[in-house]
Image (cartoon, rainbow, N blue to C red; front, side, top):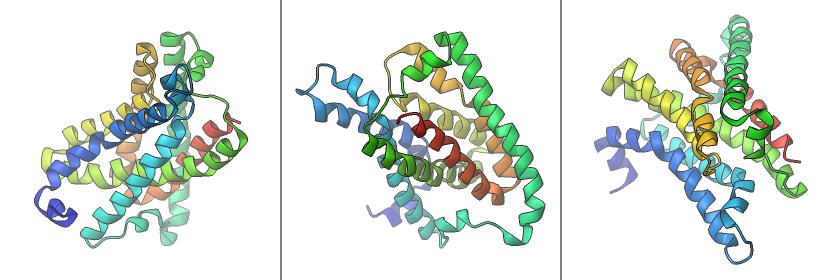
Length: 242
């Protein structure tokens, strides 16, 4: 079956697949990294948790290609999502600045509080997934990671899935499912077999995802601003790996 027939005949099924797609692909790529080093290291999976950002970049690229194709099938432009509305730029700046403060707080405060509760502190939590990388790897990821994740995550969940899912299951269920999978994908980013860490990764971004869901339903044209903010926040994560 061609992608065009799949899109026209099974859009609902495609939406369900795409909800869980990144959660699964993150784990798959990490598994491939572990397989690649079997025989050369004592603990392949532990090594894969060091190189996990490369699996994220690969998943992001797949997401971008898929979104570009799906929007094209609807006669729309995926890249149009990233165009700033120049006519409303000045009027949008005040709400963007205010919401940005709330977004950063919603991302950081639960992160720290839950890390203290579940893992004994932020430093312990960070030790599970922030590892020093060779300079070439960190330098590549410093651009590739934030750019690709910014161009894939919010556009997938909030610009593509959420509005189309609303038409099928209603606003409340669509928002609930979208928020859940936005958060759940982090449980395999990376996949570390420590239940406290998995729960922390699963729950830490719930307020963040809920807030963004409401923001993008209220004013979809603000997406480009928060794509940029998202990229800058993730750039700081990779900077810690030098």
